Amino acid sequence: MKPRKIALLSAIAVLIVLLVVQILTPPRGSVREMKLSEAPDTIVIAHGADSVRLALKDGSWVVGDAQYPADASTAQRIAASIEAIKVLDAVAKTSDDAVLARYGLDGANAITVKALKGGKELRTLVVGKDAPTASQTYIRLQGGREIYLASGTLRTTFGVNVDELRSKVVYSVKYDDISKITVSGPAGTWTLEKVGSPAAWALASDGKQRSAEAISHTATAKSSAISIDPDKAAAWVKSLIELTADSWLADDASLPNVAPTTVTLGLGDHEVSVSIYPSGSGHNVKYLCTSSATPYKFVMGSYEAGVFLKPLADLKK
Image (cartoon, rainbow, N blue to C red; front, side, top):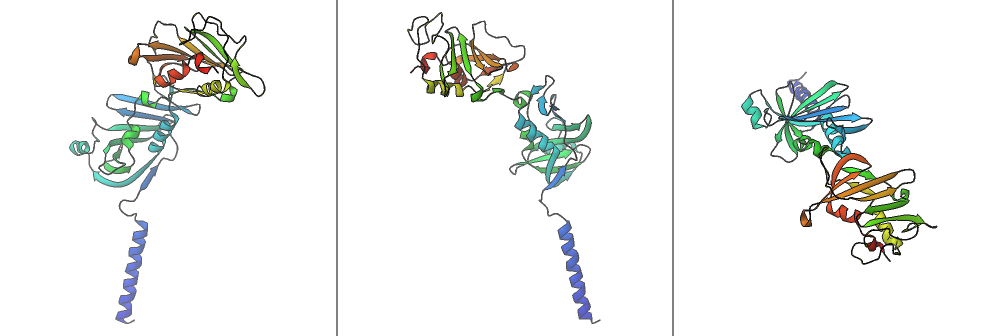
């Protein structure tokens, strides 16, 4: 075979080898996913002396020793982030404390996340500080010396406490399921119910407000008749179908020694009630609450309190 032909074939062989190597070797900066073979049912997040435990219970995530219902979207995001880690590059390989501190991976600054299934540890992830590049974080896998650059704001994802993980939902019902609403408090007691066909909202029974006091902002005498605007009433009832707590109170928190206003939604075979205890005055007033829908006391936002405490006079024709 002629030398020229041999050289040409050799060059082709080298190009083929280089092409195969390029195909089989991911380019630097490409995303490599480290995915667990099974989904965790428990996640423990530790940062310094603080720790948070998420666990699946009857198909839903709960948080803390008290097993508070967790915010579903936040819990699912945490579970997905520990189950599948998207790694961009290995930036260092070290056990030197000074180097680890530079990446926020030392004991004082790192967030440690453990994923477990049936009590068996699936993965331990050590989360460092955010990288200068947007939406990237420095991480280590426990037992390894490599420091990786991972995709995502993992420090924000895992840097949460119990209060931030708890679901703020108090209740959620369907408008069509509500057949009546009773409001009872210092200003009196009155009930709206659906009547007629098609159903419309009206003041229940004798069409009167039974009260020891006049309706707020009116001079109406005791037990005086009121004509309700069905459309105003319907709009008000629709504003009550969902309630989200502004924040949760401590389990042992005391309620003010005042008469509450209680709003009760009749839902056919059961009821949902919310009792509101105003505390303070003026711009400093807070609305502390209980509800039959949850065993936990909570704070209601001022806007929501205004909705629940709407005077009957506002629903007049």
